[in-house]
Amino acid sequence: MIVRKSAAEIETMREAGRISARALRLVGEAVRPGATTAQLDAIAEAAIREDGAVPAFKGYHGFPATLCTSLNSQVVHGIPSAGITLKEGDIISVDVGALIDGYYGDNASTFAVGTVSELASRLLHVTEASLAAGIARCVKGNRLYDIGAAVQEVAEVAGFGVVREYVGHGIGRAMHEDPNVPNYGVAGTGPRLEIGMVLAIEPMINSGGHEVDALADGWTVVTRDGSLSAHFEHTVAITENGPLVLTAE
Ligand code: MG
Image 1 (cartoon, rainbow, N blue to C red):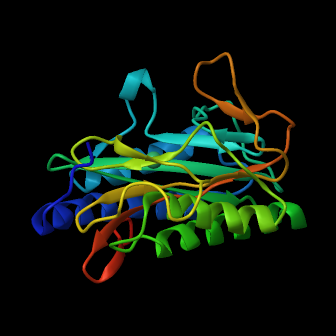
Image 2 (cartoon, rainbow, N blue to C red; image 1 turned 135 degrees about the vertical axis):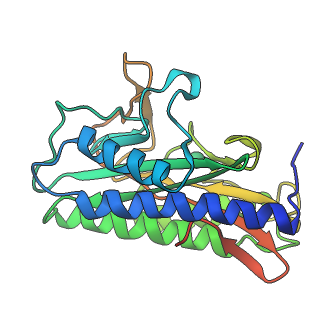
Protein backbone atom coordinates (compact mmCIF):
# COMPACT_ATOMS: atom_id res chain seq x y z
CA MET A 1 0.00 0.00 0.00
CA ILE A 2 1.33 3.41 -0.93
CA VAL A 3 0.96 5.81 2.03
CA ARG A 4 0.27 9.40 1.01
CA LYS A 5 1.56 12.08 3.37
CA SER A 6 -0.25 15.21 4.55
CA ALA A 7 1.29 18.65 4.10
CA ALA A 8 2.24 18.61 7.81
CA GLU A 9 3.96 15.23 7.44
CA ILE A 10 5.85 16.49 4.41
CA GLU A 11 6.99 19.46 6.49
CA THR A 12 8.45 17.05 9.09
CA MET A 13 10.03 14.99 6.31
CA ARG A 14 11.57 18.21 5.01
CA GLU A 15 13.45 18.42 8.32
CA ALA A 16 14.58 14.78 8.10
CA GLY A 17 15.70 15.54 4.55
CA ARG A 18 17.54 18.70 5.55
CA ILE A 19 19.45 16.83 8.25
CA SER A 20 20.32 14.01 5.83
CA ALA A 21 21.47 16.52 3.22
CA ARG A 22 23.66 18.40 5.70
CA ALA A 23 25.34 15.17 6.83
CA LEU A 24 26.00 14.23 3.21
CA ARG A 25 27.46 17.67 2.42
CA LEU A 26 29.78 17.54 5.45
CA VAL A 27 30.99 14.08 4.41
CA GLY A 28 31.57 15.33 0.86
CA GLU A 29 33.67 18.19 2.20
CA ALA A 30 35.84 15.68 4.10
CA VAL A 31 36.44 13.39 1.13
CA ARG A 32 40.13 13.57 0.21
CA PRO A 33 43.07 11.23 -0.31
CA GLY A 34 44.14 9.83 3.07
CA ALA A 35 40.73 10.01 4.76
CA THR A 36 39.34 6.71 6.02
CA THR A 37 35.73 5.73 5.55
CA ALA A 38 35.46 5.34 9.34
CA GLN A 39 36.37 9.04 9.69
CA LEU A 40 33.62 9.94 7.22
CA ASP A 41 31.17 7.82 9.18
CA ALA A 42 32.05 9.62 12.43
CA ILE A 43 31.48 13.02 10.77
CA ALA A 44 28.03 11.97 9.56
CA GLU A 45 26.95 10.47 12.87
CA ALA A 46 28.05 13.56 14.82
CA ALA A 47 26.22 15.87 12.39
CA ILE A 48 22.97 13.90 12.58
CA ARG A 49 23.03 13.69 16.38
CA GLU A 50 23.90 17.40 16.64
CA ASP A 51 20.66 18.07 14.76
CA GLY A 52 18.70 15.98 17.31
CA ALA A 53 18.12 13.13 14.86
CA VAL A 54 19.12 9.47 14.75
CA PRO A 55 21.21 7.82 12.03
CA ALA A 56 18.69 5.81 10.03
CA PHE A 57 20.93 2.99 8.85
CA LYS A 58 22.77 2.16 12.08
CA GLY A 59 21.26 -1.06 13.38
CA TYR A 60 18.94 -1.39 10.38
CA HIS A 61 18.81 -5.18 9.82
CA GLY A 62 22.06 -5.16 11.81
CA PHE A 63 23.96 -2.67 9.59
CA PRO A 64 26.83 -1.43 11.78
CA ALA A 65 27.31 2.18 10.64
CA THR A 66 25.74 5.58 9.89
CA LEU A 67 26.95 5.59 6.29
CA CYS A 68 27.11 3.15 3.47
CA THR A 69 30.46 3.87 1.79
CA SER A 70 30.98 2.09 -1.53
CA LEU A 71 34.29 2.51 -3.33
CA ASN A 72 34.88 2.28 -7.11
CA SER A 73 33.39 -1.06 -8.27
CA GLN A 74 31.29 -1.31 -5.11
CA VAL A 75 27.70 -0.38 -5.91
CA VAL A 76 25.98 0.07 -2.53
CA HIS A 77 25.99 -0.97 1.14
CA GLY A 78 29.77 -0.87 1.70
CA ILE A 79 30.70 -0.79 5.39
CA PRO A 80 32.91 2.05 6.67
CA SER A 81 36.21 0.95 8.19
CA ALA A 82 39.34 2.46 9.73
CA GLY A 83 41.19 0.13 7.36
CA ILE A 84 39.77 1.69 4.17
CA THR A 85 41.71 4.78 3.09
CA LEU A 86 40.67 6.91 0.12
CA LYS A 87 43.23 7.34 -2.67
CA GLU A 88 43.57 9.94 -5.40
CA GLY A 89 41.44 8.81 -8.36
CA ASP A 90 38.89 6.82 -6.35
CA ILE A 91 35.19 7.46 -6.48
CA ILE A 92 33.17 6.89 -3.33
CA SER A 93 29.42 6.53 -3.05
CA VAL A 94 28.03 7.72 0.27
CA ASP A 95 24.47 6.94 1.34
CA VAL A 96 23.05 8.47 4.53
CA GLY A 97 19.66 8.71 6.19
CA ALA A 98 18.25 10.39 9.29
CA LEU A 99 15.20 9.81 11.49
CA ILE A 100 13.52 12.67 13.33
CA ASP A 101 10.04 12.99 14.86
CA GLY A 102 9.12 9.60 13.42
CA TYR A 103 10.02 10.32 9.79
CA TYR A 104 12.96 9.39 7.58
CA GLY A 105 15.13 11.21 5.06
CA ASP A 106 17.48 9.35 2.71
CA ASN A 107 20.05 10.63 0.20
CA ALA A 108 23.25 9.63 -1.53
CA SER A 109 25.98 11.06 -3.67
CA THR A 110 29.14 9.78 -5.33
CA PHE A 111 32.23 11.91 -4.76
CA ALA A 112 35.49 12.10 -6.69
CA VAL A 113 38.63 11.71 -4.57
CA GLY A 114 41.00 14.29 -6.01
CA THR A 115 41.32 14.02 -9.79
CA VAL A 116 39.55 11.03 -11.34
CA SER A 117 39.59 9.44 -14.80
CA GLU A 118 37.50 10.85 -17.62
CA LEU A 119 35.30 7.75 -17.45
CA ALA A 120 34.70 8.14 -13.72
CA SER A 121 33.92 11.81 -14.15
CA ARG A 122 31.45 11.07 -16.94
CA LEU A 123 29.81 8.32 -14.86
CA LEU A 124 29.25 10.73 -11.96
CA HIS A 125 27.84 13.38 -14.26
CA VAL A 126 25.51 10.99 -16.09
CA THR A 127 24.25 9.32 -12.89
CA GLU A 128 23.43 12.68 -11.34
CA ALA A 129 21.71 13.73 -14.57
CA SER A 130 19.70 10.49 -14.59
CA LEU A 131 18.48 11.27 -11.06
CA ALA A 132 17.43 14.76 -12.18
CA ALA A 133 15.53 13.25 -15.12
CA GLY A 134 13.73 10.85 -12.76
CA ILE A 135 12.85 13.63 -10.32
CA ALA A 136 11.41 15.72 -13.15
CA ARG A 137 8.87 12.95 -13.79
CA CYS A 138 7.55 13.17 -10.19
CA VAL A 139 4.43 15.02 -11.21
CA LYS A 140 0.82 14.24 -10.29
CA GLY A 141 -0.85 12.16 -13.00
CA ASN A 142 2.36 10.64 -14.34
CA ARG A 143 2.92 6.90 -13.89
CA LEU A 144 5.40 5.35 -11.47
CA TYR A 145 7.54 3.71 -14.16
CA ASP A 146 7.90 7.02 -16.00
CA ILE A 147 10.56 7.72 -13.37
CA GLY A 148 12.66 4.64 -14.11
CA ALA A 149 12.19 5.02 -17.84
CA ALA A 150 13.64 8.54 -17.64
CA VAL A 151 16.60 7.37 -15.52
CA GLN A 152 17.28 4.43 -17.84
CA GLU A 153 17.17 6.59 -20.96
CA VAL A 154 19.85 8.97 -19.66
CA ALA A 155 22.10 6.15 -18.44
CA GLU A 156 21.82 3.89 -21.46
CA VAL A 157 22.24 6.64 -24.06
CA ALA A 158 25.59 7.25 -22.34
CA GLY A 159 26.44 3.53 -22.70
CA PHE A 160 26.15 2.71 -19.00
CA GLY A 161 24.40 -0.17 -17.21
CA VAL A 162 21.41 0.33 -14.89
CA VAL A 163 21.47 -1.89 -11.79
CA ARG A 164 18.27 -3.95 -11.60
CA GLU A 165 18.50 -5.77 -8.25
CA TYR A 166 18.42 -2.66 -6.05
CA VAL A 167 15.81 0.04 -6.46
CA GLY A 168 14.37 3.19 -4.92
CA HIS A 169 11.41 3.13 -2.56
CA GLY A 170 8.60 4.93 -0.85
CA ILE A 171 9.68 6.55 2.41
CA GLY A 172 7.95 8.08 5.43
CA ARG A 173 7.40 6.55 8.86
CA ALA A 174 9.43 3.61 7.55
CA MET A 175 12.67 3.97 5.63
CA HIS A 176 11.45 1.52 3.01
CA GLU A 177 7.76 1.75 2.10
CA ASP A 178 5.81 0.84 -0.98
CA PRO A 179 6.22 1.28 -3.83
CA ASN A 180 9.51 -0.01 -5.21
CA VAL A 181 10.92 2.60 -7.59
CA PRO A 182 13.03 0.82 -10.20
CA ASN A 183 15.58 2.75 -12.25
CA TYR A 184 14.33 1.12 -15.45
CA GLY A 185 10.91 0.46 -16.91
CA VAL A 186 8.32 1.28 -19.51
CA ALA A 187 7.01 4.85 -19.56
CA GLY A 188 3.24 5.17 -19.20
CA THR A 189 2.94 2.12 -16.92
CA GLY A 190 2.58 1.59 -13.18
CA PRO A 191 0.44 3.28 -10.53
CA ARG A 192 -0.51 6.92 -11.02
CA LEU A 193 1.57 9.40 -9.06
CA GLU A 194 -0.55 11.33 -6.60
CA ILE A 195 -0.11 14.33 -4.34
CA GLY A 196 1.47 13.30 -1.02
CA MET A 197 3.50 10.37 -2.31
CA VAL A 198 7.12 10.56 -1.13
CA LEU A 199 9.74 8.56 -3.00
CA ALA A 200 13.46 7.94 -2.53
CA ILE A 201 14.78 7.89 -6.08
CA GLU A 202 18.25 6.39 -6.31
CA PRO A 203 19.85 5.40 -9.61
CA MET A 204 22.78 3.00 -9.29
CA ILE A 205 24.64 3.15 -12.60
CA ASN A 206 27.63 1.07 -13.73
CA SER A 207 30.24 2.12 -16.27
CA GLY A 208 29.99 -1.43 -17.67
CA GLY A 209 27.31 -4.12 -17.50
CA HIS A 210 24.34 -3.89 -15.15
CA GLU A 211 24.99 -7.19 -13.34
CA VAL A 212 25.99 -7.12 -9.67
CA ASP A 213 26.98 -9.57 -6.94
CA ALA A 214 26.79 -9.41 -3.14
CA LEU A 215 30.01 -10.05 -1.23
CA ALA A 216 30.41 -12.57 1.57
CA ASP A 217 30.15 -9.83 4.24
CA GLY A 218 26.41 -9.99 3.56
CA TRP A 219 26.24 -6.28 2.68
CA THR A 220 28.64 -4.97 0.04
CA VAL A 221 27.34 -5.13 -3.54
CA VAL A 222 29.87 -4.98 -6.40
CA THR A 223 29.69 -4.85 -10.19
CA ARG A 224 30.14 -8.32 -11.67
CA ASP A 225 32.55 -7.08 -14.36
CA GLY A 226 34.60 -4.89 -12.02
CA SER A 227 33.44 -1.68 -13.72
CA LEU A 228 32.87 1.50 -11.72
CA SER A 229 29.53 2.28 -10.12
CA ALA A 230 27.89 5.54 -9.04
CA HIS A 231 24.85 6.23 -6.85
CA PHE A 232 22.87 9.44 -6.38
CA GLU A 233 19.68 9.71 -4.35
CA HIS A 234 17.12 12.24 -3.22
CA THR A 235 13.91 11.97 -1.21
CA VAL A 236 11.21 13.64 -3.29
CA ALA A 237 7.58 14.59 -2.50
CA ILE A 238 4.92 14.90 -5.18
CA THR A 239 3.11 18.18 -4.52
CA GLU A 240 0.59 20.46 -6.21
CA ASN A 241 3.57 22.50 -7.36
CA GLY A 242 5.45 19.53 -8.81
CA PRO A 243 8.41 17.58 -7.40
CA LEU A 244 9.76 18.87 -4.07
CA VAL A 245 13.24 17.61 -3.17
CA LEU A 246 13.14 17.10 0.60
CA THR A 247 16.82 16.21 0.94
CA ALA A 248 18.06 19.77 0.48
CA GLU A 249 19.50 22.23 2.99
MG1 MG B 1 17.26 4.77 -0.30
